[in-house]
Image (cartoon, rainbow, N blue to C red; front, side):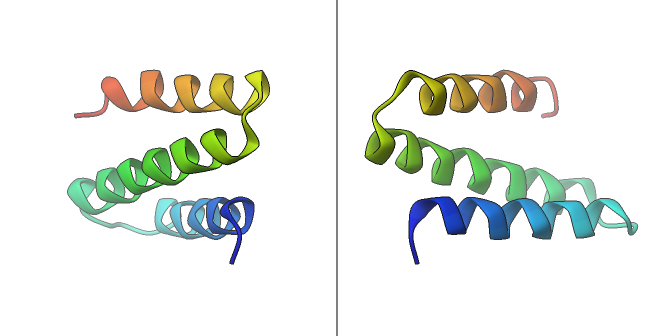
Length: 65
């Protein structure tokens, strides 16, 4: 499975969790995993768009802890 596919699957999983009542820590764990996977994707893609997306994810997650 390639990096982009992993990201899409993770996003779908996070979206499905958002529709239910899941513990906050579980959702945060998924978001942290998304950031790690996005960092891998950004390294593989190696472009500014990918790096920008990762920075946005990181900033958004900082306020959620």
